[in-house]
Image (cartoon, rainbow, N blue to C red):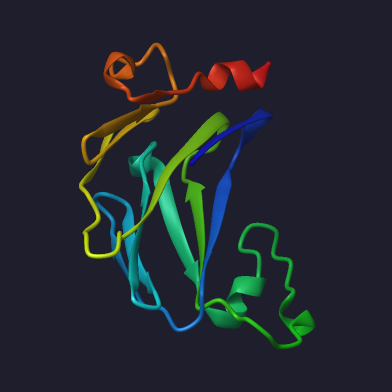
Length: 155
């Protein structure tokens, strides 16, 4: 998943991800990888871009209805139903005018395992043997099985 963002002034960008009820998770700060389960299926969520400039705020249960940036509190409006066990607010630490999140969400295949996910640069990732790149100027663009020019979508 590639999110390309821009603002006319430096700002904090946040990527919000919800995990279903009753799921535990493991977070590896060095690779910014989060492992969790959906039933019997193991899932890896891994941030690729700018991981040294990211922070994770894991808001659990009803605290997921409290916005850590604006302070807006929606907890009083919760009327039951599904309540996510984890609400992951992933944000850049240093404010920026332009930002991108490059994220891999990979469920473990039936009878298989999650492949190695390796950040190549802030626009390119290797998942198993496949290289995915969002910048044709990247040194990894020539090796990419999937090459998407994100710049085209900005116009």
